[in-house]
Length: 67
Image 1 (cartoon, one colour):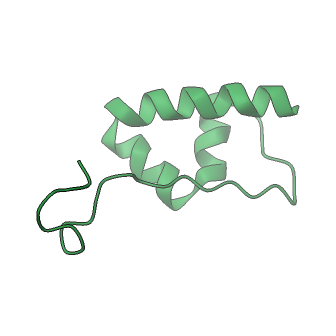
Image 2 (cartoon, helix red, strand yellow):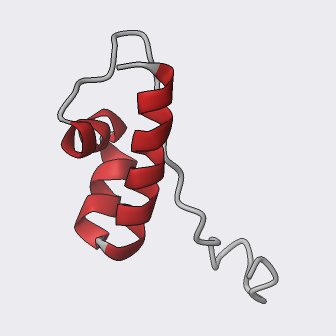
């Protein structure tokens, strides 16, 4: 997978994760699997991908200032 293919895949992962809670959970627990589901290709060994959930933690942001 080229760098450009990976960039496009990440964009597709982002869009799908916004509407599919099950896919979002896969993104957070196994990012390489999420990329493979989108592209049908495996991520090259040595490439580390991590997706983060941007939902503020209510315990650390009780007033909702992060919204």
